[in-house]
Length: 319
Image (tube, rainbow, N blue to C red; front, side, top):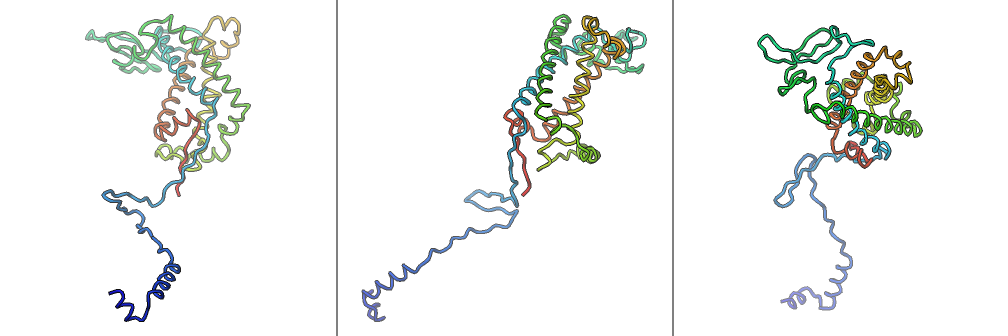
């Protein structure tokens, strides 16, 4: 049949081979085009449908926290936990705050005490500036025990004042030494002036920053690379106001320190006033810690923890 076709066309075997070879030599690869899928639709791959995003974000890794900052941060975690809980143990020994140099039991600024009601039932009563609140089960009287703060909030045990003082003193000095090393590093490396000190532009945008935080709109892209104005004010306030107040008022409550530095009593208005300031400053620090942890969770828990462990922080930019 092939010979008949060749005969009918007048093409012999040799000419046919030459023309076929010429066609092969001149042929070009046929372009294979992938089927295009409109943005936002689904491309089918076998039995699986894969979503195609309109635009993928660009991921950038930045070295956010240096080694000394990370070490100082993680040393502060156990220090602060034990300082707070042992401090509550010490407070339970005399659960009231006063102003001045003496304890006026009839006019405390704050007191947390168990009180027997007319029915004979024990109630926990918290008094703040003369206003009384029933806090049974949490403060004053909890788990059938007469104590200002509950047992689970104190260390080393439910009632161990002497050991609580020793723990508090040890971790207080560890906290101070760690803080001094961090401050020296932060000042020498210009971490304070470069990263923490708010600029005039920052302060002018404080209103917007407050609104964004209330609405849970957190910085993204390039803005996420640096601290916002509220973070800067919080860190500066803790480092240069709250922490020094805690340390100095804690020293003022020590009779030994007062003997060596009597001017501390003059500055703070007496030992009881120093104790009150110490308590308020400590709870301000606790408030900062609570907000700090919430922000870590809300802005990307894994990314934030990784940056404080390895130093590397991931920033996503919209394409």
